[in-house]
Length: 152
Ligand code: ZN
Image 1 (cartoon, rainbow, N blue to C red):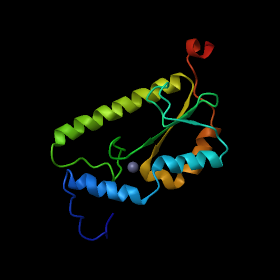
Image 2 (tube, rainbow, N blue to C red):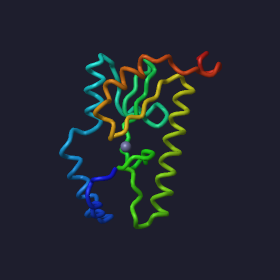
Image 3 (cartoon, helix red, strand yellow):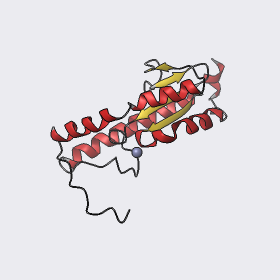
Image 4 (tube, rainbow, N blue to C red):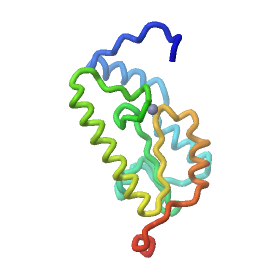
């Protein structure tokens, strides 16, 4: 990470920050659209924002048993990702918020795996390689279900 010149000036925390971040986001295709396109190219049917499954996955197919979350690195606090900084103001507030988001995400993933779903989290910083990853994960063996749930 050397040689990037002087550190970027921190973006002020609120409304200016969200205005700037909002403008950056609009320049690209929304992450969910990148994933939707990749799934279509792979010939996979899906439903979006599936409220009936733990965590309301962004994409899921109950027959093929896959669930996909498309997570923003900032809000879901992608580990060791440069987009997942903690704002300097109200640090304790943000750290608690990120911890709660991550705990909720992890609980949803565990619940889906217990139901026999392959679960994939696609981070916004990884969208460039999403199609190859989707193909790889969907080719894997499904997780073991617990006896009771598998019997349903
Ligand atoms: Zn990230």
